[in-house]
Length: 216
Image 1 (cartoon, helix red, strand yellow):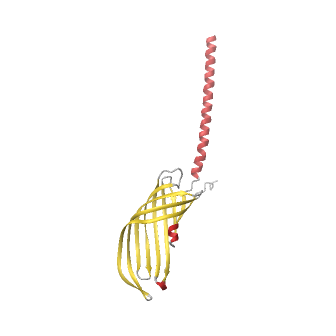
Image 2: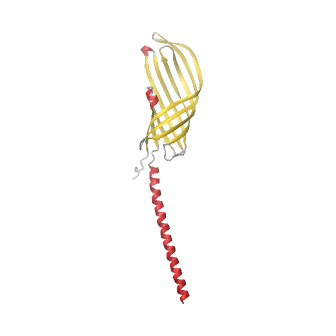
Image 3: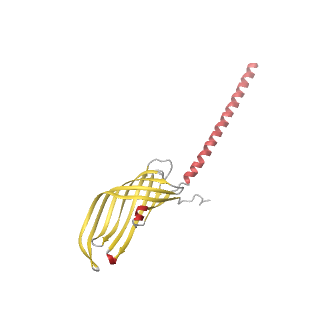
């Protein structure tokens, strides 16, 4: 009887120990779930769009805008427009450029979105009319190239983005000279160029285009 009682006591102690272990495991699981939920919530609030303006082009009196869509932590797509449409007919001065481009970007690993190094592949084209009072050049162009950039945040929704690009530029144009109140056509020409094709230092506004509270 004493042996049976001892066995029963040992079994009861074992059952209580297993129950305590199970309770501790459930508590740990609930703690892990609670710690994951805020992270998932923060990811849902991540800004998925960025609106940019290149401050270098702005300084050169070429208004520009770029919209970038963050697909995920590794990939994004950007589209931009650059337009300078200035002229002074009386002095035969033209500074007219209209350019549109698109770029796909791959982001290297960083500790948060919209922060760190990236590389891109871009293509674009447009038209131009450039004259400084003596000889003018009017035509169209196309360019494509590779780019490298680095974006760094300065606040919860603002960043700076530095980027350089190297590639190929093709342009065909007419050469003309002003004379009195009209212009004299000289000849047609074309250019094939390999080298730097863009340089940027942009002010960036990051925002979320999808309101997570819209369905509530």
